Image (cartoon, rainbow, N blue to C red):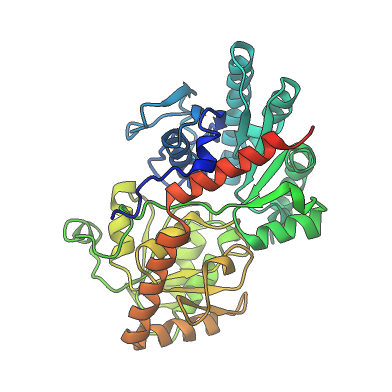
Amino acid sequence: MRSTAWVVSPVYKRRRGTKVLLLNSGVIPSPPPLGGGVERYAFYLANGLARLGCEVHFVTGVSDLTRFDPRVVLLRLPFLNVPIQASQFNVLLGQSLGGAFVHLRVREALAGDSYDIVHGNTNSGSAFSLTWASQEGSKSVFTVHNTTPWSGRNVRSAQQSIRRATFRLLDAPLLRSVDRLVALSASSAEELTRLYAVPPARIVTVPPGVDTDLFRPDLDTSKVLPKYRLEPGYVLAVGRLVDQKGFGDFVRAFQGTRAVGVLVGDGPNYHSLKRLADRLLSPRQLTFLRSVPPGDLPALFSSASAYVFTSLAEGLPAVGVEALASGLPVVAMRAPGVIDLIEPSKNGLLTAAGDAKALGTSLQQLLDDENLRRAMGSASRSMAIERYSWPSIASRTLEVYSAALAAPR
């Protein structure tokens, strides 16, 4: 049986007619041509809810790659050609413009129609839209993708000030006002309660899903690897090159090891990371791939021997779930969100945050033991199928909607 088979149980049939206004970020089209964990999440969730019988109206930009379920009604946004990977300024510009377009489209939709649920996915596209939706009689749901406590963890004072101001303006009102908050991991849910006093009854943990047919261990990679001059067996990391992702520790972890790494992503820290790699590592020990089309990513995962996380904080990273589905063991520094992906000694290894040397030692241990690596990779694949398939995630999200609709105002 295919791992992504859609099964509708009786509890969900009772909510088949749920009418949902689902909001994308407004910055990156869906599905995203590059990066965009939030946008991938929204794309798969829209299709998944439609397959469960919901009437889904999706506020989103649309890329040339779009293949939506025919039951999804697209409320299209203009394409914003803002390269948000380039700088913090571009991030602010793109999020501000995208959020404004989302809000205008939401007001237009609510003026001509009514919805049971309005579900937002980014603070800029949701803060004012969900308040407006509540005033119009809809129940509101917000998914916390990038854990809000990260607002206080940025090591650069200027970025920290921006994040704190953004949090006060956008995130804090959402945490107080929406009917249900979706946290992507148990550790993210715990932090929302401990640090921001969100009542646990309003938080539901639902992780992001993964297409387990697209990301899998046995892909034919013969046409993809030559494009990037790669040989199978490298250690992989994927993400935006910013402080939050901790990629400086990823580079330093390779010192003194025989590992060969590939870092996929772009961002304002690219040049500093490249200089660090040139200074610390042997030539060609670490390959930077700044631009990879989404069609090549599954093959790059499938050809790796392990995946590495050095993030300071995550909700629950989509690339981590893709690594599990690709049958990769995971070596990671302890951080909220990341730890939810790993069962130590079963599908990966955990080290102390900020200890690049310990990370490198664990990585070399894994690479030296093929039997351990295979056993952990098999466990990762099983976890992805059991816990993170999109049919299951869509069904669990529908349960969140049911709880929100049943709750008193």
